[in-house]
Image 1 (tube, rainbow, N blue to C red):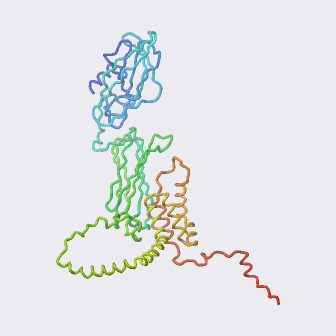
Image 2 (cartoon, rainbow, N blue to C red):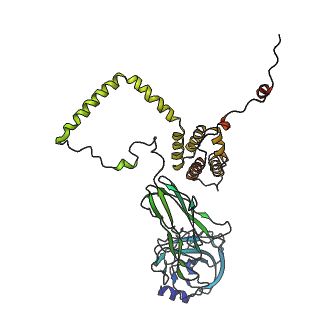
Image 3 (tube, one colour):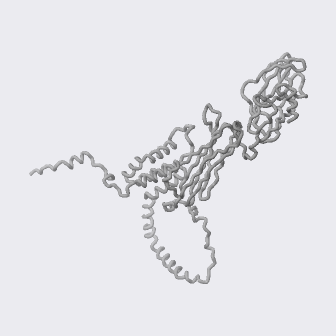
Length: 461
């Protein structure tokens, strides 16, 4: 770094010339120090502007094809848009013409990083024989970068002038809402920042909580405003409640370096506490074997037969007798078992369980079919009350928009099935316990009703 500053002090504008450059064309570096102290060292988090200059002893016949980036392993180099800047300078007693291209360097790690020169550039000077000249590359540019004082403990290092954390819970927090095993909470964390680095800042990762299953969803970064330099990065995850009890979903915090105030700041998001009760519904009859809560229980069927095994002899004889009788009457028993199973298959409870499973698994097409099947098991008055419920109407409309709506870029690709299930659950709980028999009866035909009110004609003799 000392050798670099000494060489920069000998050349105006902190220009570093190459001793190996050809006399007709020269290539050199320059570090832009506008707006900062020349003696100040470079800090991590702030971009460094450098210049790549091509000089010829006459004018240019064709523009120079500058590279879009420069080779380095510990920084990101991006070309600053715009046409190259043209200048004139007296070098070795001759008038030289120069084309200058600006680059922005974003160091990734503290320490010294080396910026390798580009490959030989083809330069076509004027007043020549038309043959391109290849300028010898300058020595590699070496710059030292250090962590700002006071930010040594930041890992990962995030630097910005403005940074904000936002979060959204789905469903929204409600102190009167009850939670059961199997319910889901969606948490969306958004980080909005104007960090100068082209790499997206690290969004705080959500930690798994005992008694829940954490499902993470990847979302692309989006621009907060079309005319703003700020960008927004999202982190979406779903907590699936697996055990009853009081669960504390953790808070989130991110420490970052404020480039304006030059101090460490901490952005925080509060957590959430939910009380989970056991599921009030029976086990899912359509669940696969081995997927229940007792699937992980130890199998004790391998225990050795003890000396008291003779106690099982009467039970074995009774089982053998009942098995023989059942085999002789197997046709009648099969018919007796099939009839209640057919009624259970078309019952309201079975259809409601299928709707719950498809909603909580976020399967929109299957949820739409299960919703239609469940509504068919209700009486007409109950169906009208379900459709009249505001929450149910909004959730069902959202499902229709997701399945059949226009594929707009701003429409979220993730459908929230938990909102539909909770709306249906609350609306069903509000239904009257007894059926309104008058509401379920069909209306009379007006013509038939008029005939019923007209007295019968007198019989003719």
